[in-house]
Image 1 (cartoon, rainbow, N blue to C red):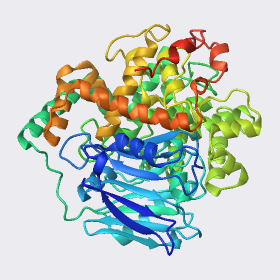
Image 2: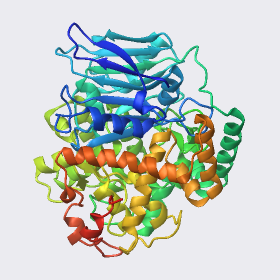
Image 3: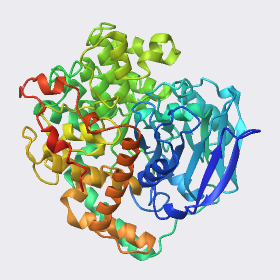
Image 4: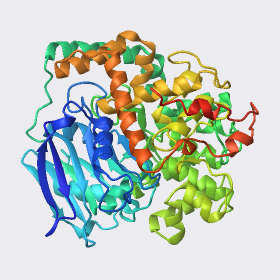
Length: 578
């Protein structure tokens, strides 16, 4: 990955491509590259959908290698949903292919004057851009099917659906999985709207004729990768729970902990939780001829995804993940997995974030647009988004805007982004992460659930305030580093509990780049990324007063623990003081 490609969509006479050396970004990848690039080159006061914003695609530091779990693609920009800096990442095949072609990043900048739509083709011979207005307002599944007819099945596709073209603030960017289904999404923050603002509908990545990226020390790299995989396979979460039941293994766990938000965060236990659980889902998938175990990209050894079929054995969608099952299920008072699967397909097809849309529908239900528990009503609201009606455009711009339009008092967002599937009142650590992360409410930014609930990496009582800021700080630093490697975040379970697995990761990075990597280097990288992101947000006008949860979390206790979020503001404000 020795070059960066810039594509100026607003250049006089049509899009222009230029290439440059990696330079100051040498050795970086993923979130480190996207965030440092955006922090340096994008005006923090720019309109996110304007010509000044830039959309950066970057594979991870180990993407395109024989290393396991290295297939995450990072996409960075100024977020139209939050107004903050944004990095959103996804699995699928795109990162591996882009890295093997040799690009550390592809940057979309500028904005076309007209309404022509473009597709970008990237291969070993270079990059070409073509107008293709036949793709207008196509959604992801038919779009990829059409592109496969032109470019075949040995490539990877990055696309946006109609939501991205319409620049809806919940719009995602889809990456195809090994079966070339558009199921892996850079979902959060409205990155799909930024791609739509650049009038880019699809990026086709073809690594034909290219080899795997070679490590500096092949033998040491192979040995480190072997030990790394062994560690993942022997950990109970990455070796047993996730492969058997997927991410949705968490439904029963969180429901029993009283931290499973239901009916727009009015309670912490959903009476229909067992019907939505990973155990029930896996049983149904296998019964219908689908699969409860599947990798989102080649080289994945955790295999936490799956295939969900309908009652007649026909493909519906990939296995809905825990966040999706919660947002479209328990959050909306719905306990039907078929409804959740249909909504998941619609999200992927239209091209919107499943968390943002599920929370938005719950807010809409609170406003009376449908009843909690109304499956048909939820599907009807999603259909409005797909049609681009005025109501659909409101819903497609997320929970905060929907709450404002319909006068809902309690809207679960931070910095404009919907809270995920863990209530911060009985799980105080995740509340700290929601409040402080640089990108709006985001569980992945500092997954305190690991230690608060699953007791991975230690034990911090979820109901108490002590230790939560330190926990979130350490997890946010580690996560920023992991997001830079191209590794799936789920490796954190094993590396937090197994020192030898963490060492294997360090050895993989070190042997690939021909350097010595230590734990201190990982911490330094994470801090560097977070500092750049915080600096961008400060220049964009964000202060400590934005690092807060919605007021109702401080005032309204919920059953069964009947407590509120109570980590002191003074402690929260010290989280980034390193």
